[in-house]
Image (cartoon, rainbow, N blue to C red; front, side, top):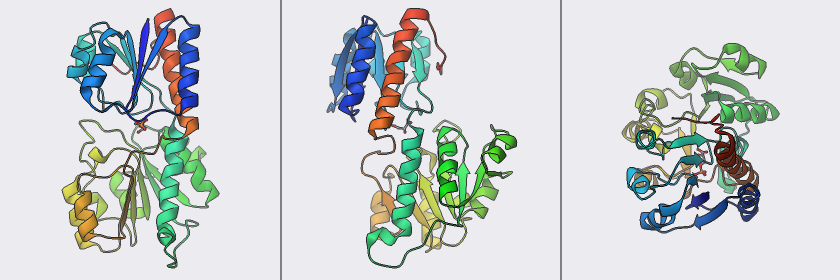
Length: 305
Ligand code: 3PG
């Protein structure tokens, strides 16, 4: 079979090498398309692919139209909002993700942004410490759990809201469950977002939540920019001169922030959360193994459609 690894934002070469080993040892051919400039490059590369491994690369109906042999798409990562699931399902294409494989890298990036901002961006101005501060986790999945673990080391007081996770699981991780997302935003100086981008969550975090943050509140978004209602975000920032937004990656309204709210945000230019060698290796190998196993045994454990 032909496996195409298409990553506009490349994996570390050590990860690609290991993915190739996994594929070739199972008798498959792995082709690589990295740093591609436009969708036509992806369409050309996918023409003879039986399997496709991607990161945040858009797998749209247009791409799928160009891939008549495609049987499986694996998103080497957690969020699969970049994949047209309905079209894949209609064409009997299996879609999987690799949950948990890059979570620690994302959590470390969230803390890096929190620390850098707390220390006034190395400007020389007096900063603040994380110790004793409240941290609210909006969702307690793989990344949320890594956040809680790191927060322990900083002696933060950690809360979480996740309607899909039992209180006992949070409590055993030293995290206090709260009853609503409103309570989370009202209680915690730092709120870190770890929800997926879905029809339900898109633009779900807006003025009503952000304006509740306690004094000097910090909103940390290493999830997806799409979950933020940016009009509401701007309104909250206009009213509250003390709140901060840290985001991986730049929101659509970044020009407004640059003009109106200098010093009150950090935006990565390129999505950096999962960009570590370890995360690349973990997610890349998991994806390659899932493809190989699917072709060999039909195992579809991580299927999402
Ligand atoms: C994910 O959903 O796994 C993360 O957001 C990482 O995305 P990336 O692979 O595009 O860096």
